[in-house]
Image 1: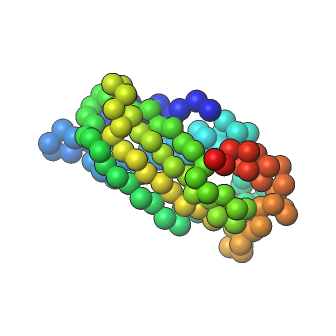
Image 2: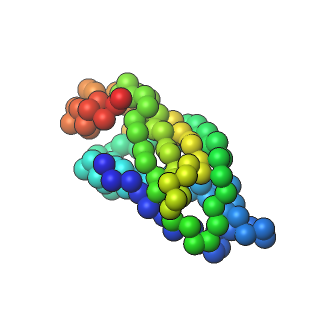
Image 3: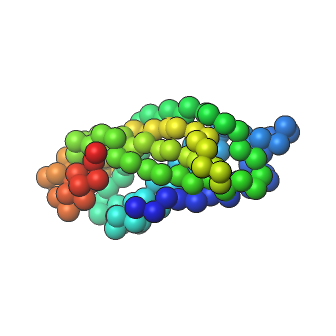
Length: 135
């Protein structure tokens, strides 16, 4: 799995020149979209299948500031997966290899009408892929 790369944009910084903390959560989403693309289950495919996966929780631990135009590399790992709930872990490092943020997001799986979905039963191919990534 290739890490997702993000270059800090000038508009993502605050008056002090540091990246505003809210941007790290947006980068998590960018990295998550890339992660699902890499495993062959793009968000477009989710939607075609009638499946949605909303965020139910986010946690960020900021370790070091980033500034324009730092390059942030985001590694994702599957922390928890049981077919109903998914927890992803994110490690963000700067161009010097220093950890700038450790984070996680939790998700559930719903049908478009908002009902919980058991992925193993309805989407076994996706379940198998995710199960193989859980460590």
